[in-house]
Every structure is written in structure tokens, then in C-alpha cells.
Image (tube, rainbow, N blue to C red; front, side):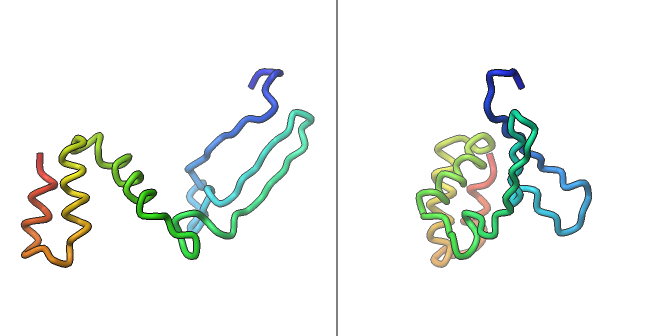
Length: 99
């Protein structure tokens, strides 16, 4: 961090092997004067009661899948998953997963 920066955000995904630890729910900010502000989120977007909208779910799906299947196959898979209740069998779904 340079002296000009007012804030640095560091995302730590490793909870140090602590069972049940969720580091993404704790936000800690160290200010330039060395003081620390910390807040633990009690509600996380995407989990009850703060569900994602359908558009946010679609974006998250594409962010995770497009790099593996490509855009067209990802779109086809999402459309198939959206109508999973009417699929004739699982073959219809799994056939969208293979390259």
C-alpha cells in the first residue's frame, strides 16, 4: 500500500482451518493511522433472507460456467436447468454439460 492510498481491501479466503469459520462475513479495515474498524455481517447477500434476484443468479451462473462451456452452451444449459421440472430424463440435462 502506498502512502496515497486511504484504504486497502484484502480478501482472505483461508480461515486457517477453523471449522465453521466464515472469513467472508468479517470485514476488517485498517486505517492509515493504524486504527482498525471491524464489522461482522449477520446477513449475506444470496442467503436467506437476502436472496439474489433471478438476474443476479443468471449473472453468477454465467460467471462460473462460461469459461468452461462457452457462452452458447452456458445459455443452453441455463435454459434447460430453468425447466428442469419438465425434463423427460436426466440425459436431457447432462447432455448439455459435455463439450
